[in-house]
Structures are given as structure tokens and as C-alpha cells.
Image: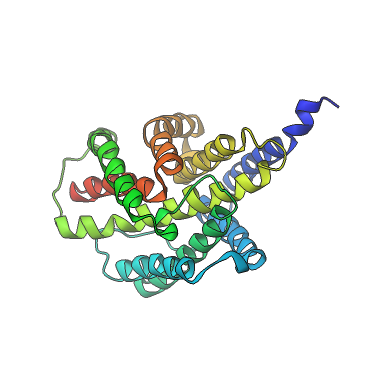
Length: 281
């Protein structure tokens, strides 16, 4: 067997597995009620994070555990006071605000802990606050905001055009607070934990390309899991919209997360949702 094919076997198997999940879920969803793609990949990511934490628990220091706890509490308490952000019922039955707050906070803490364990092994994304590198952390946040602000305005114009309704101004404080929900949870799950987990697998066979191949895979999973319903109605349109979304709003936080730290990707994501919630989308 060709040596290059052997080297990339894990990548091909991983890519095939992701595609199969998307395909089977879409086929089943056209006939039966089934979990959303976000729920499926969240479960996979959290399961991997739990395994990593159990195996590498001795690498976690008190500051790491404290950091995971703070992220979880921020998400949990933020969800309790959210008014503009209403997530889909997790697993189909976690619906009420207190239930969402508890579950989202717990999942965030577990994903942060798993990502930090892999970070200790040289993973692709650093949570700089967990390293105590506050200067770089704040610098990354400002870079993320600077890169994200113009794209957030484009996002609002695109939503206005595609959804066909005018801007409806909302409470600015609610927009600032509620935007932390998708920004923290999605970036922690998909940009930190999932990317790190995929990197661990690929780094064994193709270490020289593992960072960006695993990063692109995690980005595509994150982008395309937003299109559950559109995959059922118009799969080609879903593929096209996902490609545009990846180009404008997937690649920038991918680069920011690797170059400037997870905090930078979170701030990029946060400003997108601040402007979206503020304008009523």
C-alpha cells in the first residue's frame, strides 16, 4: 500500500466518519424525530473530553480546574438571565432556562478541562488565561474584536437580505450579555475541545499537517451543523451557504484561535452575535 495513503488513513477515516454522521442524520431526520447535528457532535466532543480528562487528570493544576469552573459558571449564570438568546432544546428535552443553564455550564467546564489537558501536550489552541498569560490574553481579545467588527456588520446585512425583515433594535445590555452564550460555548466546544481531540488523533500519523487538517475539519463540523433543516430542504444550498460561512466566519476565528489564543476566537464570535442580537436577528 502507498506510504502516503497509510499516513493519511486516520484523516480519511475521520473525514468519512463525519460525512457519514451528516448523511445518516439527514436521511433519518426526513422520516423520524432525531437529535440535531449540534447535539450529536456536542456529545462526541464531551465524551472525548471526559476520556482525556480521566487519562490526563494528573496534568491539571488547580488554576486549570478553576479556569474550567469559571467558564462553566459564566455560561450557566449568563444563561439564567438570557432574554435574546434561546437555544434549541438539548437532546430534545432540556428545555427550561434553569435546565439549559445547568447543562450548558457543565458541558462548557468539561470541554475546557479536556482542551487544557491537550493544551499541556502541545495542542493546536491555547487558552492563555489558563497559562496565566493575561497580557497575551487581553491582546488576543482586542485583535479578535478588531477583526470581527467589520465582518459582524457584513453579517447583519447578509441576515437582513436573506431573512427579508428590517432591523429591529434590541436592548444593548441584553445583546452584550446574551452574545456570550454562543461565543463561549461554541468556541470552547468546537474550536478548543473538538479541534484538540482531532489533533491528538492526526498528530500520531501526520504531525506536520495535523494542526490545520484537524482545524479545518472542526471548523467544517461547526459551520455545517447550523444547517440541519436546510440540509433536508435544499442540500446544495446548505453546502453553498456553509462554504461562504466557512470562508468569512470560519477561517478567521480558526487562525485567531491558533495564533492568538482561544480568547481571541471567542471575542471574534462574540462581536458577531452582539451585532446580530442588537439588530434583532
